[in-house]
Image 1: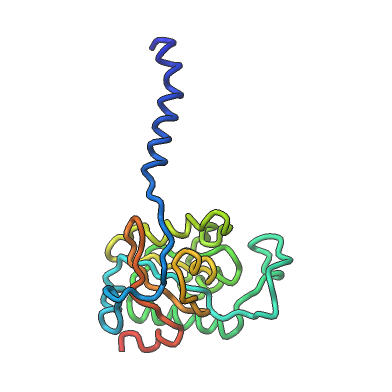
Image 2: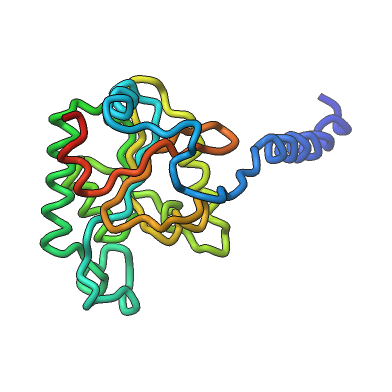
Length: 209
């Protein structure tokens, strides 16, 4: 290979990287996280959809102890200095997990914000969970990683389960704000997503009945 061709390689690599970056879709924020009128699911139709897979189920963590805050935390694993799940929150996360198993809803990826309250909810609900920083990334980044998790297609026969926070979800998906323990069921669409249902803590007991 000639010296001239060797000198060209860095330029070619840079060009390829630039093209790859431009190929990534820019995901816009949604206007509302209420179920879309032309796509809303409930009752047996919602249960059948979740059993068939291909959806993202995004939870705001269950009830927390608001007498505590996060201002003194030194790391994500510093649970002594974070707001944690309340006893009710722990019971609710456990009960939701029991319903997920009883209804035989498929679980593929199980992801959570690395905060103690979100990891605890996810573990009580699904047992095995992977922490993902982009679920709780700084708002200055536009929550690009969270938007990608909501929009990336999920294979049929499985679902992506995410336990995160209310504020990041509202920032990218729009109002109304998720209540503690409420879940949004989302159909991903590569360059965006569609909310098809919202499930409160109390709704899980009646799902499928």
